[in-house]
Image (tube, rainbow, N blue to C red):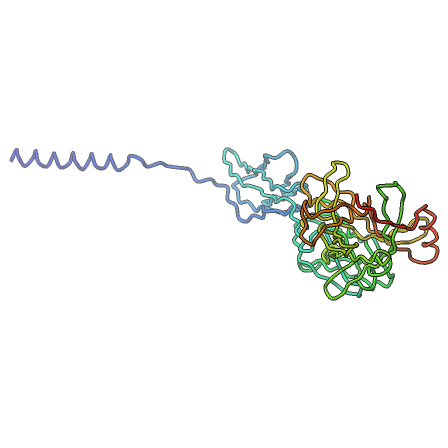
Length: 375
């Protein structure tokens, strides 16, 4: 009987010990009496409003962790949230704390940075016809578009920026811009309207500084397109310089190493020269580019296209084009004979009307009378 009693006592002790062990590790937490019924706390970059609906056993207060861009007001059970415009590209956040007696609950307020993404990029190149162009646009803040001229109109609708241009019947390249403000971010989109055959091709003066005499001289030249090839023809020299017209930005590109024609027994090619450093090249990877502009000066209009360094020649900065004689069309130091002519700071210029021609000719520019001398 004693043995049975001891066995029962032992079992009771084990049960008691197990019950105590099961209570270990259990934490009792008090559930906050503050409940969030609804929330609208994710904001775009523009100045915006949102709200939080709170259920609390008594009156509550609200605090924010930011430095003033997020403010709150309480009306009954609703917390009205106001955020100022975010002028930066980075998103930002504030912690909103609701306090009721000794109980609190926290909610993160998030505001994105400025987003502006336009598929048109920074330049619109268009033909002369009256037409509307549409581009994808993403913007999460207030956007203002301001065209520079009345032949350009622009608007945004359903994720598209629509640009409408009237017909260009001026007879020359027409340029303007659309300035835009997205929040505090400002920039502009360049707009160019032209047709090569109608507004660019034609008779020009190729004006340059003669680097031997220092005189400002010119050739009469013709800028033309035959098939897919663009050329500057110099009838007085019986030379034709191949060039490239960039349809995307309207630039005219003149490369080194281009065969122009023959002089006596020699093959004449374009060579590009950095006169400051004294280096020249006939590599066709190096070029000078001309931005074609229509300029009005003293109420006289003309088209001008100055050939300038376009960054294609590493650390050198070319400012001249040479007509170089070679023994063959294989260009090398051993086949190079010498320079026939060096054109410093060359540019194409065309007058529009008799007044423009008279105005240009009054600038002390003389027609070139070239006798080639190899040097």
